[in-house]
Amino acid sequence: MIKAKVEILLIDDSESINEMNSYFFRQILHDVEIITAKNGKEGLAILENPDRLKLPDLVFCDLKMPVFDGYEFLNYINSKEFTFKDELKVVLLTTSMNQDDKERIREFSFVSNYMIKPLSMKLVNHIVSTHLINRT
Amino acid sequence: MSNHFNNPRLNSDELRQLIPVFMSEIKEDFTKLEVALLAGEYEFCLEILHKIKGSALSFGITVLVDKTQDLRGFIHTGEYDCALNERLKLRFLIQELSEELKKIT
Image (tube, rainbow over all chains, first blue to last red; front, top):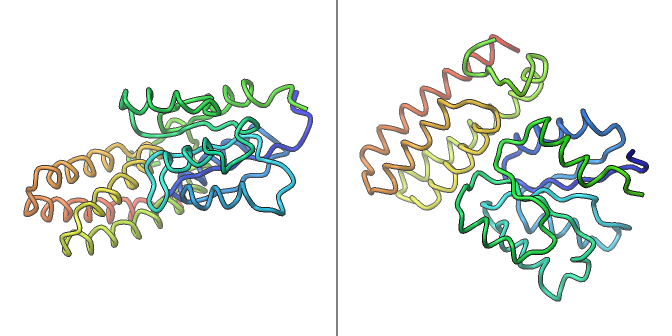
């Protein structure tokens, strides 16, 4: 059972993908706040906003994006500059089926899933039941 | 519902709601792509094509995924004249998708 309001951060340079994924989460989670960012830099600005009281429950991040890509985002989270690494759960959502990418992300302990686009209602259900059910 | 927008993950109402955002984004991206292609900024072209491909994949528009792949292939192999021709096919396809959108919304 999902006991509290869920907050999800979606990071993708495609507005339409963010829209579609937001739609899927809203269909499944009734009390959900979706925040979107169009690159890793915007995503980090949201996470490090001093007015923010807690981290999002889940972060979805694309790998290939302009300005600040998925790896730059992950590397920053992994660095000493970001102090909440252990409290963050990141799901990578990418078109890359490259084995090197899959291997490379293993160094990031906070990455819980590596998923190939597109997201579907079935996958969203799986993610919700894996990461959000029974959380307090 | 048209064939191009026939996405098994979304019903008709959902498509009507989400497809306009997609089309608006694709048109904007395609304009950037044409400018970059004519200016010879091929790395930027590849970035835009990657983005278009991701969106098209998410909306299940496989014909658009294929066209972006073709164009990426020509850029990768340095066949820039072919890339310029292929971009016209992509333009027609986007016009076609846009016409279909008018019918379903």
